[in-house]
Image (cartoon, rainbow, N blue to C red; front, side):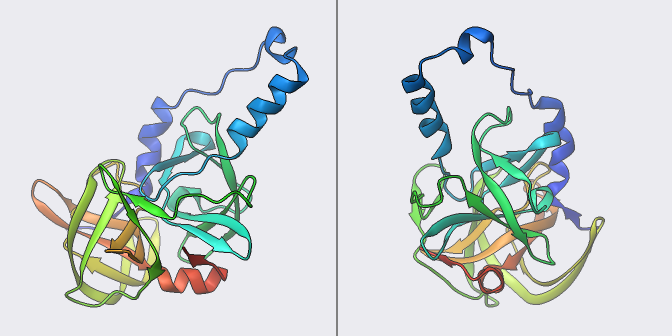
Length: 234
């Protein structure tokens, strides 16, 4: 069965996303105190791993892991969001700005610097329901049990079946990937976090099959990404 990249959900989301409306004159005449309060409220949000994030043009991705670089906070994502300079938002209407992409790896993984980067964000992954704290990173190994959190299929668990793979997707060839027994569905987006207990192990990049018929999915080992960007999970 032909592999497909998960970021193709962007075409569907483009039909659903509603552009942010322009503020009315009465809104712009709000007092200085009110405007300052609103700015602080919209500047500091941050999400957990596994939550959807958005960019202009109907692009939808998944927040992978929150990471730290020195005293600044960032997050990892992938797919259509992996473009340097791209602004990333927490809602499809693009009204809640989360940050800006500051670096991208060759395998299309993005480092996004949060607005107000000194504000600490949750170092956890959403587990539908609940949260799993992520305290360190580790390398994937064949036979290891891992889980993935995503906004479409929720939390799914399985095992690693191969590592160091080169996979040809319609959008291009990716190297160094791990394969798992975790299924994927159309609409699952790139960047979803793969983890083993409190250990981060990877970021989702694609898959084949469905959760109804069985399938496989692939992830980029997160250790390589952390090293490339000089960041750490926390």
